[in-house]
Image (tube, rainbow, N blue to C red):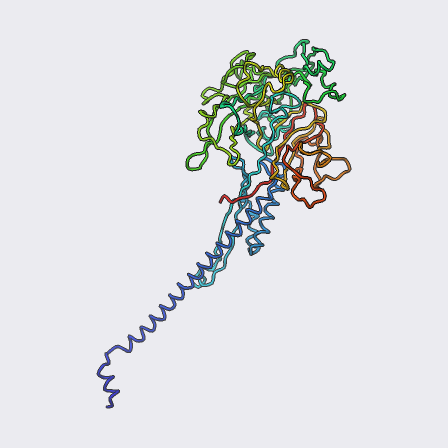
Length: 609
């Protein structure tokens, strides 16, 4: 026996051969498991990478899509077309970021796109996309179906326009128009697209939102908010009444007094001409210095079927208080908490009266300016209270009533919010708004007509001191004029040069007429203006519209008028420098035409989620 065999015999243990075979099997099984775990790790890592890629793509798609929502607003007439453009833009950005067709087509799912408006007025655009990702090693373990990755993103842009609530918002003169809403139980054909419960554009109860801007240099602590004729009750026809004229009209040859009366039915508005418009027609005086009408009634008693109305168009044969519209006016503000969150804080509320057994109707606000719960004007016949349980009055102390009020960064501006909701009824409730110092209760009348004469005779006698009332995006109007008039819409600062403003109108009819010219009050019309609706002339933005002012019964002007602010490109041969100004609309309005302005602006997008 040689040494090798002797060595093997000495150290050989029984059963070693079988154990060696088992080890090979165990090692093989361990390798399979190790490869399996490695494969799972690779697949999981691959899925994670795809998820990150999808999130980056959908973030970019949301930011791109939200910029296409120019002109979108709650209840807007062409929201569907606008959202379709946004979806297309989002899909293009998904493709540009390497997403396959299956991902971009997932955007068409109805539940994968939402457009909403935040309480502060920002427009939010939320999209969701799904990516079916194929795996490799997981299939070995029986996972044969692709892994569906779903990611979402929400982008926002602040596009709500501050629309001037009145041509005379500074001094509170009632002139060529007033605001108005209809009750919940009438049709939209009369000019209010949102308040009727059966509205196509905003089914259910709707609230018009306003913002009362308090500038940083406002020199007083108290802001007095006044409502003109907030109740929906019409007084009967007067006999012949004496109507005083403005001093300007007297100085230019008109008699100090004229007379007038109301014809027709108590259910309709009544504005008595003063004759002072003759001085405007012959070029003697500008419209701003005359008093065109003596206002006797501005509400319109409407309704069909049993009171308070059945949602159909119609009017009673004679005045019927049971159809009157009850309107709620709510004052509140945004409070900023220490952690940066904001909450609504109520200030006061007033519910307009309707009479007719539904309430006493004893506040006597017809054609009067009142501040519910606050001090009476010297000529106010009765005290008008805020609603029972209201936390305060319509005189707001900025120091004590608005702790933590949200202050706009960079400007120092504060806003008091005003919500206006038609709660029931079917009639048109005309009203007007003013806000400013409380110092005029002993010098300026609550009677709207007397106030007109006082303020026109003494310019500056009733100044808001910079406080301005704006409608947020949608402004419900009633025209008291059947002539060409300039209507200030929004203020545009110079930083907006090159950006777009979108304007539409609802139910412009009843004697209104095209064309409509948009211009800035800081630029000569000859230097810059846009004219829409000229017969036989294409609109300046190249769009073909469904109607023109005067022929838009129960419909929005679509597509919206697109107005690009000048002053962005000095190399343009038509370049006009722009230093800011008020965008103004000039057209022939219709007497008694109730309609709505809807305005939004472009803004810079940002991700919220």
